[in-house]
Image 1: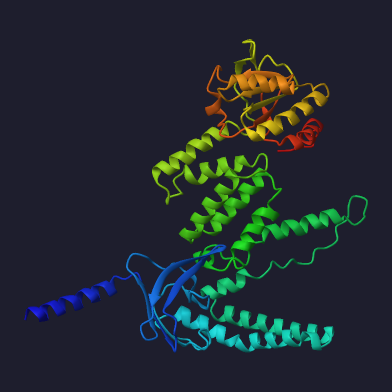
Image 2 (image 1 turned 60 degrees about the horizontal axis):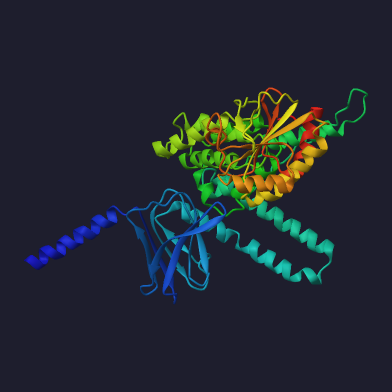
Length: 473
């Protein structure tokens, strides 16, 4: 009797464990000799292994109670690299049965309509894939014209299969994937004439580019979180191209307009909204382009400070907000509080009494390897252009080794205003968030920041643009 109770208890426990399993994928592969299979998924430009199943007479089981399977493209593979992709959306418990000779085209699905439809599409494409392979083998034996004709016909057939699938299953994850790989089609733009009646190619190009930028994500459903877990060519590559190329030289305000637009499009997906908020904010936290730190500050104010970054802990949000508030004081157009420090002879200097059209504030250390190469270059620029631009420099020592500092000044003959930052009228290290050197700010006569963080090799050009009014930030 006790043995019977134990057996019943174990059976009930097993049923409960299955009931509460977050996912359960049964996989049977006829004639499979591999000892184990790995379950993984794509994410942006990477792949991740998430589970392992061991061979039990050709049967494998992927099951976990503490992990869910988010929507996306997954794969099961051997340790030697043989693999088969599968699509997961809402169904988390299903079974697959196939043959080791060809996992994809022999597969049968039970319990997942998403996976079933996905594999039906893959099988429908097999004749097309075979024809493409055959054409590639015959390419060297046929004329270029014949190759182009057959290749075009195959492409048109492939496009028709995609179109038919999308029309039949518009909400299927595969339809979202297929649409996302489609390029933006530009309409025909009329030729625009300038005020003299001549064709204006610049205006024509501008309007085409604006349309391209406005409609870049027309085919990418940002409310679909499953796109995050797809091969990089589906979503990630296009997304990165948009920010790295299309938006590279856009103004600060334009960046914010498109950031808000994309996040609004993604509001139907918590995962995608979270990704966009985090990625865009982090992108402009690290942006090397001068002035784009304002985008970071604004992103934090709009999405972190307002509580929309709900995935972060209160302490993490506080850290982000405090940093953004500090950076806001250092944006181009902000006024720097008067800084006063003593020089090598203990004579005090401050920014306010440096009555020049331009003032360059540099935080540096003689023990910094990068400073040792950059500071002499800055000084050469200073000597050459100080009269041209009515320019003065306050170079602030950031380290405690004043002996080395004085020696470096003497050896390099630094003739600008050298001051010791160890003694100052306020905590400049905290105010300017000096975590690496050299840190450089170009100020106007009233101590307003007009440019910052410029490499020594670029400073001459930046000053030329600033002084001519051509640099708009």
